[in-house]
Image 1 (cartoon, one colour):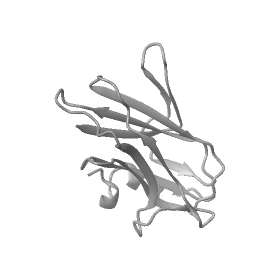
Image 2 (image 1 turned 120 degrees about the vertical axis):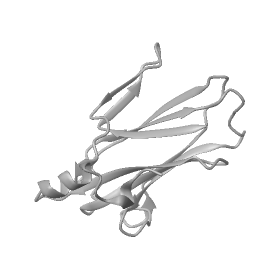
Image 3 (image 1 turned 180 degrees about the horizontal axis):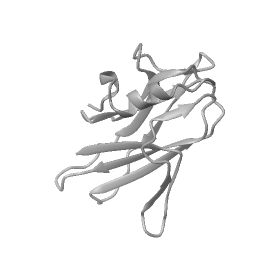
Image 4 (image 1 turned 90 degrees about the horizontal axis):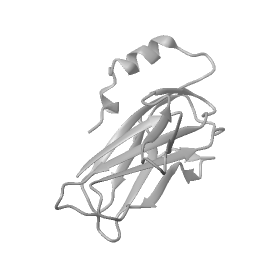
Length: 152
């Protein structure tokens, strides 16, 4: 089983073809308050694999500095949980869209996406810039200079 996750400005699946249509795919830098954003999750299964009946796909935004989940209004974790897809396909693709407007402190964050009941887990880096955008910080993130944000 292989889990791949990407961030984007917007994404949707074409029901007729199964293709993902996305804008701003792979962008790692954003501003606060957060604009709308999307996650694209691709799960590739080996022929002998299948999801457990109670498997789910979960994701949560974490602070890269503390590793703690980001809390909306200091109370609710910013994340999602959805049942794992069923069926006989060897590939499952999901898109999740989040509306904008959430205020978040500038800094480094990551989405951690996992499939329950499996060891599959991936991290997607995200840098949030404040009103005074620092282009050097943006360049260092794109160059992969922060080892805490590397996918594992």
